[in-house]
Amino acid sequence: MQSRDFQVNINRWATICENAEKIDPQLFDEYEVKRGLRDKNGNGVVAGLTKVSKIEAHKIVDGQKVPAEGRLFYRGYNIYDIIDDLVAHHRFGFEEITYLLLFGELPDETELAAFKESLGHCRTLPTNFVRDVVMKAPTHDMMISLSKSILTLASYDEAAWDISVPNVLRQCMQLISVMPMLSVYGYHAYNHYERNGSMYIHRPDENLSTAENLLRMLRPDMQYSEIEAKVLDLALILHMEHGGGNNSTFTTRVVTSSGSDTYSVVSAALASLKGPKHGGANIKVVEMMEDLKKEVKDLKDRDEVAWYLDRLLAKEAFDRKGLIYGMGHAVYSKSDPRAEIFKRFVKQLSEEKGRTDEFELYSMIETLGPERIRAKRRMYKGVSANVDFYSGFVYSMLDIPSELFTPIFAIARIVGWSAHRIEELINMDKIIRPAYTSVMGEREYLPLEKR
Image (cartoon, rainbow, N blue to C red; front, top):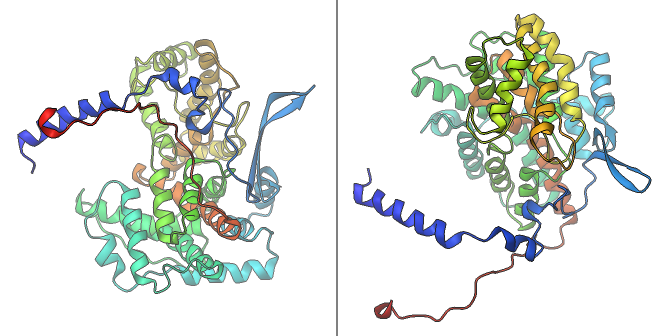
């Protein structure tokens, strides 16, 4: 335990830091700095090229860029077409679309069977790894637990530093396969040691899909319904990849460009994803909705719900950040296709779970949220519900603990990270090194005795 004097000094030094590091906001305009690597209209700075995926949120009309319904493409295939085919043929698709993102083409039946078999064989951890690593120093922060496990796995890999494409592909496939195990086992360790719950370590089944195995390992009785597994499978597919410009994928590219190993790259991406402005946003949606239920007396009254949303925007409710979580996106304007797809299956799942009233509340806010934001904010583009708006609700209906919300995002997104890492390695020319302009003038150095 640190002394009281130490904490007093930390507080004093923190104030000094804040005063010393503060930069006049006007200087960012003066030096034409694109804060967050985005211009004033929210357009991202182009930092590279990719074949992995593409986002479309605008169309050109009479030479002008105007907002349009959002579209998402995986390797050139529209996400709507991918999902519609999987649903029509009643099959799990996580492994199939993983193949697509990694190798650039849709597999035929023989290729898919071989790939599924390989992923199944990879669903294993080193001897005593769960006991020696996952169960040691458990934490409620599953992303920290994941990072610890991923970095430790490097110690078991004799070729950890080999960045040749065949070796990196092997590492990526193994990490894609064990990420659900590391996440669920990490949660069970925390639940047992920190919350006095029971411990369950169920082995995955090589013949089951990733979504089925995740639910099998999480639940005490290993039981789940088909619709539960299918909805989770779709959720994983929708979170697998997103245009290459998101924070965690950019982190993957940046660290890969330095020549670092796969385990360090994935750990860095996990650190980026865990932030509430990125992968942790769906937890904020669920927490916001719980606060709304406490503050609003009649959850079917649009005026009462609108009143609460206005209070959110005025920084008078929930966490007082002025945000309606789950609304708006850095790229999409009129719609997020992932949210649109999600909504199709959320209603069906809510009916099975007896939570249709809650689904109706979400649907009401999906409409009211953009209306209130447009009324209270000056918008440079449209605003709509994003994928995080419904994903937390889905996970709660699947009885997935909130501690695993962001890890499930990671279980999906490691596929996109892997594809971008391999693409960066193949095309890597220079280390990614952005420029910062100094706004600190020169000062005369004073010896210690004259300060």
